[in-house]
Image 1 (spheres, rainbow, N blue to C red):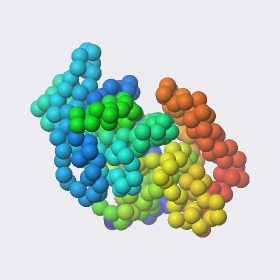
Image 2 (image 1 turned 60 degrees about the vertical axis):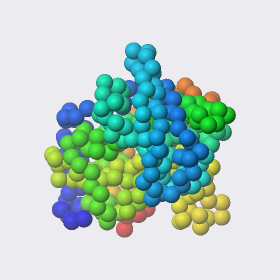
Image 3 (image 1 turned 120 degrees about the vertical axis):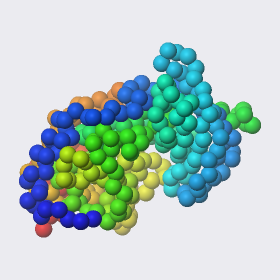
Image 4 (image 1 turned 60 degrees about the horizontal axis):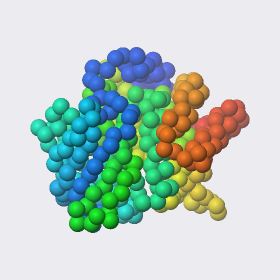
Length: 349
């Protein structure tokens, strides 16, 4: 990616530009209808799942017929045909219920909550265990927390999916899942586009957004990402600013989720007792004033961030306590000047 201005000079002006163009300016495009509500959506999904879940090739482009049925806004039942494709990497190989891409016929979805959607990612539970269902609620909550901190974040919609396979009545089960907003739809909200060119680095990003995302990744103890390889990252370029804006996604390997299949980053695995719940700051060096601006919303919106978890009624008291306790550890570090400097300034010369 080409360089714009020297990083330190740009760091002084970009936060103000970002605030004017993204935080305060009204969007010219509303999020798709599905993502304008936070109420869980009741969905029935019927397919030959034995065939679908057999497709574990991460490069597969196969699609499988399915029927999607859901409760409409008027309380009526709406159904139409869709197509399913498998996606992902580790979850695709290890989970019983694999991540899916659901393809819609726009003519059939007109006037429904799925109206205008061409395809959407659907993230289901991994196995039938109750712990996996609880982990999925926490993963969904992470997206909601990110939404609270920055508009440059994908929206999600929780759903209760009843899985049906006509050839196997015993397969039927109802578990949580969530839909994820299309990246191009978010780009329209941001008045820009998604950049898919690899090779970018943190110094080319909007400093405040980069710092905020670095702190967020540390808060949830996520180490499974790479900005330069666009691994669990997307970069947006807007029409109203010269900066590029990084956005993180896919948080199932975070310590806050603590999925049974997740492993810590290679640098963490060098320790004798390394766990995915061990926090490691993988961000860059940010000037003190930029870091302070990035950290500020974590403090002012602390109650709201905790409230995201508490608002999920299906979270068990023990899982809620575990998740909030994990956040407590982060805030203890944030409130300790010595630890704060040690963690977030250790990468600086």
